[in-house]
Length: 453
Image (cartoon, rainbow, N blue to C red; front, top):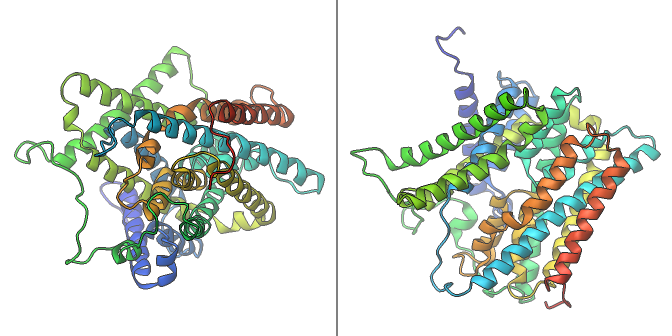
């Protein structure tokens, strides 16, 4: 049907909305989804994926990929813009918070490096047994697990532009399987920790609305955020969204400037757009604070925008998965994801049990992060610390500073390694070296102790 304007993106958003609503209904009705706290966006996304692959939805899959990419960027912008959490009773615990954030950062960086190492080793193994599995597909393990679906999509897009077919679908498939580990292994892990008394808050009884995923009219719920502008001037939510748009515009401007200065930007640089967006978001927040306008950024609203972005990102990601492509590589894909998931579980639990105070809370956050996203890590944390009384939630907002050198280092090698002439053995050496450096720092900083719980 001819339309005066291009309506395809809004039609795609409408379908994403239908999928999420369907997921909300299933989460509300089915105890299995409540037991494992499966997010509605994941349930609905899988339903949307089935409908798309049955050719029942007359929309192009590229629409959902584009939506997923942009909301991935927005999620990092909102993280950068979110004011720091101020928790009553945590004043004077700066050293503890800093150590917790550093531990999380090292765990995140070590996860990225070790998953990249495992991806390379498995590609070599597949070659020995006669299975054709490109190196890039193996490197989707850290991109899809530790970095999440947005990064897998972004780098997959770059690789497809360079001639690697089906890269996007493979990246998104790995990320989707990562979320299965986050919830179907993470939740039983939490029950194990509660049963053995490893949690700081003891046994916590989850309220019904937490399990159902919806509030009833007689149940106390949470505010969306605080108004920082008067509605007679500008709606407060509009102001928060505009801050996100400004950061996106500034980030694009930086890339346009670099493109002009260097006479053309390497396509691989677009895989780092999220990182620049995060940094510029932090810079805007700092500048607003220094100029006396920082209070206009509302933490609650920015957190809601992050949640919105992740929900849409994950739903669009799952909708975008082409099952035919996945089936073609099903054996090596499952081996890659299973080995990666088992290793990540062992790695996080091993060091979590040796990290000291609040080790379980920090461990469960990092398990969710290193198999899904920050949002899945915080969701798992809320099962054992519903009101965020421990410092783990605050540490989660800070750990990226400690993780950045390792994350960026691995990302640079993944994206540019082959262009720079680094073969798989060179990359194995680099990833192994970075992982060993993480282990050394864990030992030197006193995070690798005897088992304490």
